[in-house]
Image 1 (spheres, helix red, strand yellow):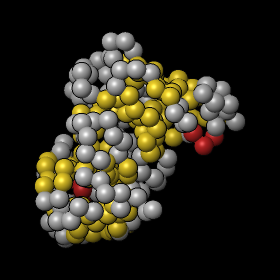
Image 2: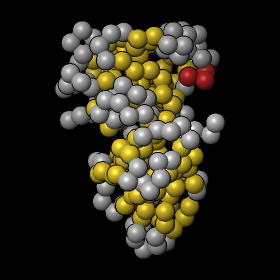
Image 3: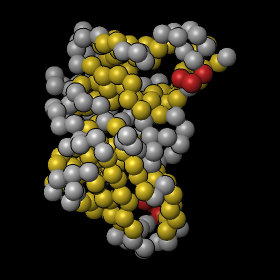
Image 4: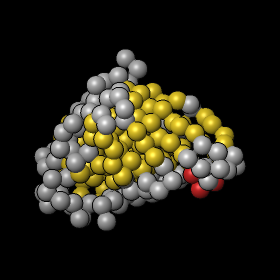
Length: 108
Length: 114
């Protein structure tokens, strides 16, 4: 199965770090790991992606396990605007396989 | 810069009617995609295109047809709508690479089939 496995929901306090896990145990060597998030009534929004090494950008960090069978999206300081569904996706030659995602709730 | 624009935003159809959803992108992307999203679920790929004049089937292609006559436009057609096709449809586009490019999504078309 090309889809990934994520917890259905997670909760965080505002201004605290959040670690969103993803399992992709059947990943192949050429698959990228992408993370997107989706706010209600909007299309998915790109967050970050990587292949083997850890990645950082202005939105988040992505930590990829050495065996590439799992990864973690890190939001360094959660805000109320980060409340969304987060999707971890395997990207194979521009075909994306979405799972059901993790609904992140951020408490003030 | 509009990005990816989908029209219409909402539509209600009766069973058996036909319609076409339009997706337009202004980023000169080679690849374009159509997804559907059912309540509480992730997106599923319907069809995609790797360039003008080419299309290919995705995960759930049955009941849909697509065309890519111009690089900037990707059309999704329902020839005979069925209630099972009630969903939110998203279009996306990306550059041509081997998998490391992000996809840019539109805001979706909410389609109800009665």
